[in-house]
Length: 533
Image (cartoon, rainbow, N blue to C red):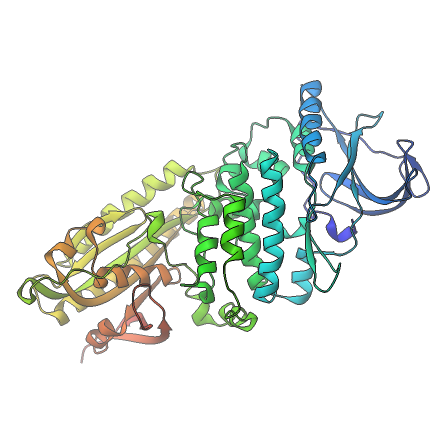
C-alpha cells in the first residue's frame, strides 16, 4: 500500500472517541513484536498507514493503525470488529488485497495489516490520465465485481467502495484492479459505535459522494450498497469526473437522497452498458434488484468496442451537453413516462395538441435542516399551484407521477393557439418557481429547480387520461425532453418550435436521441416572448 492508497478525508469531528497518539511507532521500530516499521506512507482521517516488513517472512506489508481509541460499550464493539475481521481474513481472491493480521495494541489502538501492493489507486490514475478507455474501464470494473461477488458470498460488505480504495496494478500485459480495505469499514464501525447524528455517522462509516441512500439514512449497508457505489465508480472511470459533487456535505447528501436518477453520459443512452449502470444505481434499495454475480455476467456479455473514450470527453465538455445530463428513465423502474408507440385510433378521434411535461426538484441545506417528507410536501404543494396555472392558460392538467407533471394545451383550440398557450404557461411556470426558489433560499437555504419539455403532436382520447395512460409518442417525447433539460430551462421539439418561432425567442439546441424513436429529435431552448408590433 502506498500513500496514494490512503483515503483523503477531512479530520472527523469529535464524537465519542478518545484521542490517542502512538508515539512509539516510527521508522526502525518494532510493531507488535512482528513487524519492522520502514516508513510512514501517509495519514488519513482515521489512522496512519505504515510500510513495514514482516520479520518471519520478510514480506512487505501495509499497517493501518487507527489513531483513536474507543469510549463506551468497548468490549461489544471490539468483539464485533474481531468477528468481521475473521470473515475478511477468509477472502481469498486475486482482486482483493489480502488481510494478513489485525488486533489491538497495548494502548487500545485497533490496527489491520494488509499485503503491500505496488501501484496507483484509481482516484490518482483518473486525476493523472483522465477518463479510461471504455474497454479498460470494463476490464477493471469486472474485476471489482468479481471481488465483491466473492466478499458478498462470505457475508462481507465493503461499505466504502470508491476510486481511492481500488488499486490499479501493472502486474502483466495489462493493468489490473485490486480492492483495498475490506475490514476497515468494520474497524471504523467498531470504533464509532451508534452515532445519534445521521450525517455524522455517515462521515465516519463511508464516503458521501459514493454512499448509497440507505447508508445516509443510517441503515446498515447491504451488498446492494456496494453495487450502488460500484456503479458510480464505473461512471467516473468513463468520464474522469465524480458523478455526485456539491459545495458542501449537506448538498452532496441531498443529491444522494433525491429521487432524481443518477445521470448517464450521452454515449451510454440506449447502450446495454447504460442499462447495467442504471440498474446498479437505482436510488431505492428495494428496487435496486441486483447482485454482484448477476451484474458480472451481464457486464461480461456487454460489448463496449463501439464506445470511444473521446465520445465521453465530448459529452462532458460543451455547454449543449451539460444541458442534457439527466438520464432517460427506464420503463422497468416505474419512473417518469414510458415512451411506447400508441395504438392509433381512427383519425376523427385524434387531434394535434401540445404536451407540456415538467419535473420539479428541491435542493438545499441537507437532512439536518429539511427531511425528505418535508421535501415531498413542498414539491406536492408546488405541483398543485402549477396545475392551477395550467388551467388559467386553458390547458388540461393530466396529473402528476412522482416528480413529473403532464398537461395538454390545444384540446379545444387550434394547434398554434395550443402551442402558444403552452409556451406562455411554461414561461410563467419557470418564473413562478424561480421566484419561490429565491424566497425559500433566502429563508431556509432551499433551492427549487424546474425542467420543462414541450412537444406538439397528435394524441387520442386514451393518451390524455393522465401520466399513467401516457402511451403515445407525444406525451412521451415531452417527458423525455423534460428529463434532458438543464435546470430552469424550457426545451422544445422542432415541431413545437415551428409553431412558436413567430412569438418567442428560440435558441437551437442540437439533436438529441429519444427512446422509442428511430432518429434524434431536434430541440430548441425557449427564451423570452417577442414583442408584438
